[in-house]
Image (cartoon, rainbow, N blue to C red):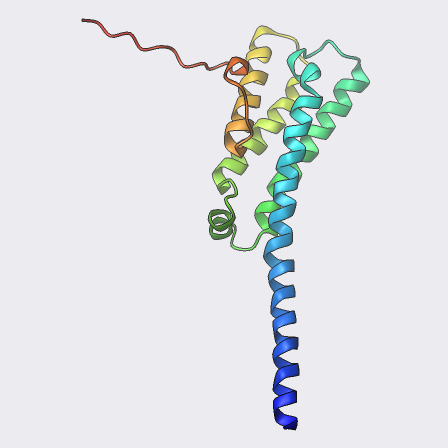
Length: 157
């Protein structure tokens, strides 16, 4: 009788420990990655006026925007190391692949650099970077806000 009680208690403790390991090693890092992607989506909207109008806002606004975008890039890349066995975990939890995370991170750095200069090329590059970030992280971007709208194919008959 005492041995049965011991096994019951030990199986309960083991279940709790395994559950906590799964929670701390997989679930929480995955949730943190999703939160960072949500923060990026939020920031692309919040700072759209600065990103779309480089060189126009005050120096302080541009500096704060650039710093914020750079921090998001670093935070996004850090998840590649915080989520164990990233590629397998990404497939299991529908996270972006390692290559897509790195591509989005590079585009965030590009945006952080692109808020200062106001040239035609920078406008297009910023719009392209926003589009790449959204596509890489599966963030919705309406077709009318895309710079690389599909060109209709015409058939010659």
